[in-house]
Length: 452
Image 1 (cartoon, rainbow, N blue to C red):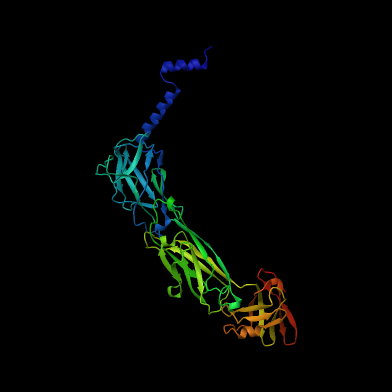
Image 2: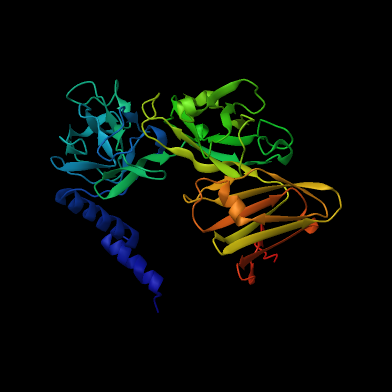
């Protein structure tokens, strides 16, 4: 009996073709049909370029001032018949209107065309039958109307990038149904900030920082520049740095760059609204910010915030981007322990008494600082009060109110600071009426604990 394999060999000898040859014939036929019907595409190859976000306008109605050249664009697997068209479509970008754009197969022109009036598409007219094995390249700036593919032209495409894009967005080119990324948007500059903390000096009536300093500790910024990974860079421009907060008692703030430099980069003060600009390069990759007090005004606990941003219109910077926005740069604290009394009363017939006492230990005397929320919600301080260890200090709410002109309400909140360890300080508060009845008022420490 003949085997199946022997039967197949006879069929091959009879008809002259095996299964593989029949399959090749079928594929060739499909290619001919595709060529007659129009175009088919298999793929497109292009290496994207990274473009700095800083040079792209913020508004979607705008576009970059300059054209940027893409990398070489290769297209393969197209079946296109002579006389048909191939459409190129840009997403988030615009073609150069005067560019002569063509598809070349080696040194031979395969298709050429003109840019649409809105610069978003190109209709390429196919000048010869294109086979699926062709590897084509896109060129522009050909030497003549014949779109010479041999010389004086440039691979890739010049593109203006649409405004309004953000970090991670892309500019894509579509050829029929396939898409390749020409440009990827990437933010070039970012920054971090390390906060500086200081305590107010009770020995200097809280007019200076501990210990008898007029200069704060340094906040530190660090700027990251992803320039090595950016193909189209923000090559020039400026940063603006600004400081916000309560500037009572503050003379100025100084920025130094790089870290360790003793020559100031910019000085911030009331005259320049606490903001200044300088070149990106001068800010360096790191720097410090120092706040100087005037030494004559009483200081209160507070925080300061820093913003650092690009300045549009400087160099090739096209948009405002915040590297830092309202980041806390400095914090000023009262030393020792702070007590919060959220409800005190000072009115005819009712009085709040706040009582403090300290035991002897590391210190024999203490400084007590008292602040109250005024009618506008701002903390206002009264003159510091000395307290000897072992003595009993009684503070009346009406006395606090009398020393703060902006405080007229009968009920308000009080904050008391003692420059000592909490384990050595005792505190409680009572509201007493004219008939001698007293009610205990909660007193809260910094960690949220109710101490009495």
